[in-house]
Image 1 (cartoon, rainbow, N blue to C red):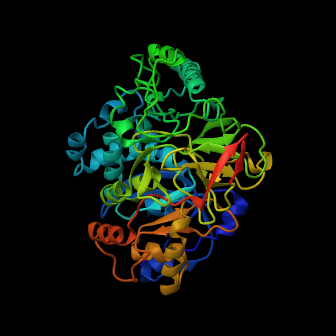
Image 2 (cartoon, helix red, strand yellow):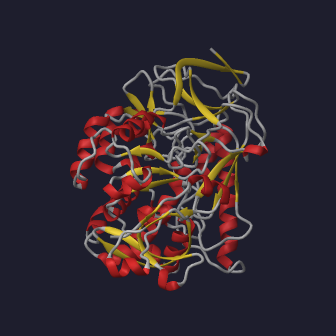
Image 3 (cartoon, rainbow, N blue to C red):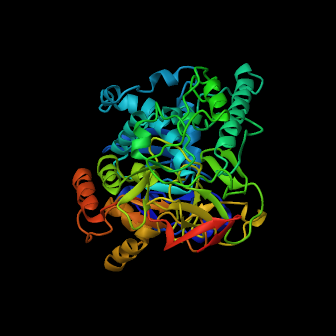
Length: 523
C-alpha cells in the first residue's frame, strides 16, 4: 500500500507556500509493498498530466526538489495548489475556441458525462476555473467523486446563467494584442455603468474595480451588471423582474471582447436617473437613499487562481457598518432542497439564513459583493468575493429594515487597517463547528484529521487559511454519523441532508436587532 505524509499547518503558515500531502514509495516499498510514513512536507512544482481513476481525477505531480522518477499520481481532492492546477488546466485550453465547447444546456452536458476525454480536456478545466471564482483559494471541497462533483457544479452554472465564470481563460497572452486593450476598455465601461447604478442605490458602498497591471493567461470577468442586486427582494419581486425593473437592470446588446453581455442598457440607466421606476410595494421596506447607512468605499481586485477579492478602501474603526447582504428572500426549504440536489458546493455559497424566520437569502441568480471568508472555523467559498480566514475581521448583525425580515449587515469586529490588508473576512462555517468536534471526539484520528478523512473516503471542507487557530476541517459530509464503511455517494448525500435540515449558513452574532443612525449601530 502507499505510505502517507502528514502536513504541518504551522509549517504551511511559516512558508506561505502551498504544501500538500503526497504518496510515495521507497525502493524497499516497491519490492515489498511495505507501507512507509514520513513527516516531511512537500511542495508541488508543477502538474504534468491527468487521468481518471474510479471517477476521481488524478494529477501527475512533479514535486519540488525531487527528480521526475519520483513523480506521483494524486487525486485532485488531496492537492493544495490551486495555482499549479490552474496553470495546468489553462495549458489544456485553446483560448481561441474553447468557449464554443462549453455546453449551452443541461441536455448537452448530459451527453458528455460518460465521455472521459471530453471531461478531462474540456469540462473539468473550465469548471475548475469557475470554481476558483467562488473558493478564493482559501477553502477546498475535498470530494472523492470528482467527476460527479464537476458535473453537478456545471449543471448549476448552466441553469443559473453563470457561464461567464468559465470564460477566465479567454484572454490573450500578449500585452500588445488588440484584445487586451479591449479588456481594459470593457472594465472601464463596467465601472462607469456601475457608478451610474450606484447613484440610485446610494445605501450600498461605493465600489472600485482594479485591473491587474499585467494580464496573465487567466482574466476573471466581473459579474454582468444585470446580475447585481443591491438589497434583499421578495420572491414576488424577483419573479416580476422583467416588468419591475427598479432592482433588475436589462442587459445591453453590446458584447464585451469575450462575447458576454456585461453592460446595462443606457436607456435603463437614463430612466433610473430620471426616477421613472418605482420601488416594489409588497413590503414596507424603508427607503435609505436619503440617509445611506454605509459609507466605507470598497475595492475589488483579482488574484491568480483565486478570482476576485473584496477589500476596504480605507481604515475603519471597531463596530463600523460596512455593507448589506442581499438576495432573494425564499423559504428555507429551498436551501435544503438545493443541498440535496446540487450539493454543498452550491448550497453553501448560495444561501444565508434569516434568523427567527423560516426564510433565507437565495443568491443563486444574483451577485452581491461579499467578503472573504474567515472563521474561527473558517469560511466559505469566497461567498462571491468574501474570503475565508480562521480569525475573521468582521461579523454579521441584524438591522431593522422596516418589514418582517431584518437586514443582515456586515460590520467590523475590530479596527481594520493596512496591517490586516483591509480584508473583509467572515466566519461562514461556524454552524458546523460542533458537528465536526463531535465527529472527531467519537472517531479519534490516528494519523491526523485530514488524513483520517482521506483514508475513509469521506467528503469534507478543508480550510486553507493557514492561520494559527485554523481548525483544518470546517465541515464533514458525515459529521452526524458514526465511523463506518463509506456509503455510496448518493446514499451518503441523502442521509446527510436528512440530518442537517439546512436552511442557509448561520452567520449572525445574536438575535439583537439594531438600527444604523449616522453610520453607527444603536439597539
